[in-house]
Image (cartoon, rainbow, N blue to C red):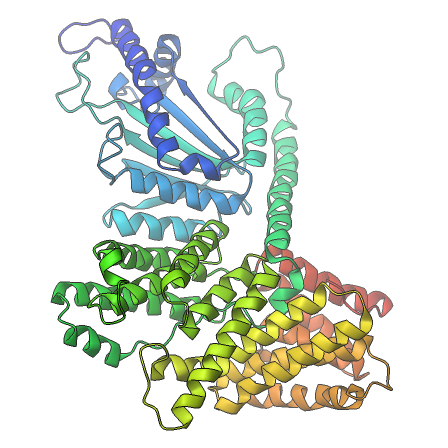
Amino acid sequence: MASSSQGNPTQLIAAHLESEGSRVVGSLLDNLISAGITKDCYAYRFRVKSKKDILNKLSRKIKTKPDYQLKNITDVIGIRIVTLFKSDMLNVYRGLINILVDKKASNFQQAAPEEVIVYLGESVCQELAKEIEKITKEKFSDLAVLVRNSEEGYSSIHVICRYAKPMEEVDFGPEYRLPIEVQIRTVFEDAWGEIEHKYGYEFREGKNPNQSAIPSKNTLDHFRVLKKFTDACVEYAECIRTECISSDVIEGQISYTKTIPVESDAALIDKFKNLGLDPQFIEQYCKARKLRDKAAKESGRTSDGRIPIAATYIQASEIFRKLSESINLSEAVSSAASQYYLPYYYCKMNEALCYMSTNLPDYLKEALNIYQHIGQYYEQFPLAQMRFGQVCTKLGKADEALQRLERASELFEHESNLYKNGRDFTDILPRSDYEFMLSILPKLLGYAYWKKSKSISDPKEKLKYLRLSYTTTEKSLDSKPPKETKLGIYNNLLYYCIEFVRISSPDNPHFLEMKTNLTEYCQKMLTISGGLDKFAVEELDTFFKAKILLNSSDVSDLAKQLIARALTEKNLNDQVKLSLATGATEFLNDGKFPEY
């Protein structure tokens, strides 16, 4: 074997690599733990290549790459982070990238990773690859994320980085640092990978010549079949999590969870200037608002089960967070006349809004914490109460959500009446918030009443809340909302009518009105959208259910359209896809009304 340039034996260098790796790996794990990365994982483990393994790898590599040297090995230290759910892989990766730019994490070299590879399987990383690239570009704009497919279907994220301090014991140059390979994968993928590694990879690479179990010619096919089961487990686990987080899959069929920001308001920026804020503060605030609005636009029409542009939202939230941290809290909230009373409010509100807009569990919890904090100092602000109620709904806190949204409605009505009686708009409810909440708040409160109805078993009481859902949501139309917003309102009204008619008896005083509304709102949805092909798949599902109750002749065709749309919708959660397609299929097979 080759020696170093100064004649040091290769075996001695390998021993030094093993020794140094064993010495520093604990400090690297400490960095990961203190950064909170391990809270999103099911398990984590590490290994340091032994002297023997290092030499064996060098020997294997030289056979195909004659110039290969010990310094080319990139996994002297290996750290594997295993998550229960594929959605957690994104959080772990984001945390790792943040460590590489965090000077406090001094045991990792503060530099771009040498390599980021996303190995695509059938499903595990496919939908995460673009988000991984966005997260990477936020911190390291010049770093290209490599996307690869393996014949075996292997799915994982690999990141090559380095230990912070140069290693002096080996003659690889003054800047040589110990290489670290971090792998991120799900627990299901990890189990499959271990089996494939033992009976596939080691045999292919000649890593275990004494292996007693020699793979047969059918082994690769067996691995592929097992991989399909593995991918199915990954998806099904994600479905279970989504269903538990969302309380009910059907929530996705009601237009609720798109977190719409208040339109950027030039009057607010003028107010900031009049308050004498630092121009750089205002510039950063405007930058973050633009990022937030960009994410909202790119996410499009979102609802439960749809995937928003999380990375852009998080980028904006970080700017809002840093701006709020630059403000002295006690000084800001000491008085409504304080220079920073409103700037602090808007920075924290926007930070929380960005977190909430991701629809990711950990960020929803962070948004909840911020809204609780805001509520301590800005309790009379209707928009703050409304946002508080929104995030409670997303986290399945139905009773608290209803309480907050009813409080928001009370405050809004109080302020609105003052405006109608001639008082000017105030900071508590400025004109931009007022115009925004006119259509959004009744819709959110109506949804909260519907959520309440889901927890009630008594038919009479259940019908009371369904009726309340309908009459409250109907108020959203009084503000003459834009076309897209109106379509979502009609969708909700139609859905509440469907549920009311299904459980109500014909002698209920509202039965005839609610059943007549089925035809009316179906037609309104068609008119405002421009046709069935313009419906979101969730709206098509609502339309389909209404047509079942109306005994329409085209209901079988609608079921077939719904199945095709649901299965091919790219950014729809797999649980929602499966539920929609299964419900429509069961209707075609036995006429059963879809139950999700």
